[in-house]
Length: 505
Image (cartoon, rainbow, N blue to C red; front, side, top):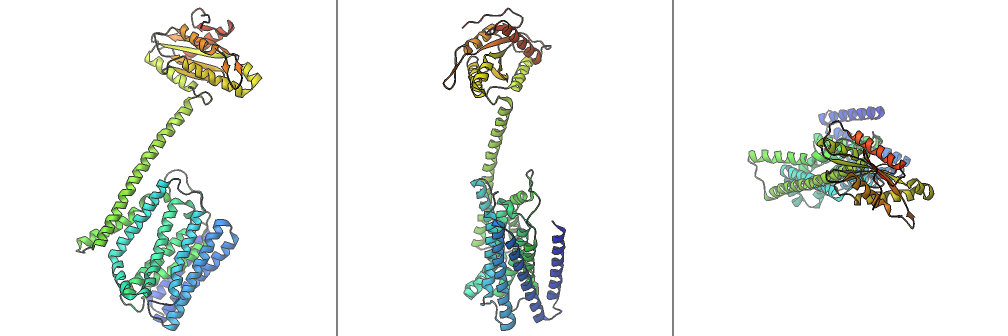
């Protein structure tokens, strides 16, 4: 956070604390305290309006549009405060006010909501799937339901009764804090789904909404009980709101890069916040029950509804976790396949071939190892191009797989060299080599061409366990036998330590 902004924040918060102290203490008298209270709110609102407008002129795109929404929001707050000051201080309008002030106060969070949605809509980092969006909706409903139960049990029921008997004038008193509550829940939910909402201006906007909503509900409760004047202490939230909006207009939007590893603050909030209001509500109900408070059916059903939403959320989360585990398993299998298989032919690579050969030697199994070099491959590559050569290699790999069992291993060891590992004591090594030659003998058909290639095959085998024989020893013996076959005229099979076997079908 820039030092300049920190200094401004400290100054404005200190000034706010001093103003609150003067207003609440009443040292200036009631009329002067109310005047200082409302004029300080108006000054902060006008300053926020000017700064949002100035910042909007410098920005483009989404950054400009959400600030223009905030210009409209702070303008509405300015109009509401101006009308309130005129009606209460000069005209003596009784509470609840029926002047232009309530409309301006209600439109303030509605227009700020447009700023939040504009910022979220312009982001490219929203949640990737519908099930995650369902979680967000469930979390929002849990928060709203918990807050409803909490406020209804504590104060909202008596306010609603007053509303029912006071007519539409009192409706604006309730709509004002309720609109800020909607703004707060929207800010919370969009901060989980869009990283661009997780920035300082939105944080101060949330603090402004929290402060205004708190004083708004207190104001509604006092009016519902016939109060004709609001005590200064109840106005603290109203005084703090314009200052928080001013800090929102001053706050920098360029923060540190978002972490890609581990659980960040947004992810932790995503996990914890839906349960915090429910926990507070549950404790409130437990304490109320213990002290003899009787709850009506609406309160009971609303509480059960919140619990049901939590259960549904957990089921969806479990389904998401199971799906993620399946995806993780598939990803690991794909990575393992890519790490141990040749990307061109799809057969095993040298690493997997060596791993299986080493395992067979350790078990003491009889093994036959064929080292195969494709003769004539360089001619195909030089005269027809690498794409044609790659096609021939794929055909060779397929034919080698077809001439051995499924449990045997065919590998591309590099370039035009292949290996075949047969773990069996019942197969003649020469027979393996001759099957390879027979498989590669027929022409290799590619896109409109035929290519004649053959192979030189060197074979090493071990029939009894010998701890001194390593995978490198076996590969070296088979490689040496393969070079012997090439010197003898290609298209030959040489078994290490035996007489070369002639080719036959």
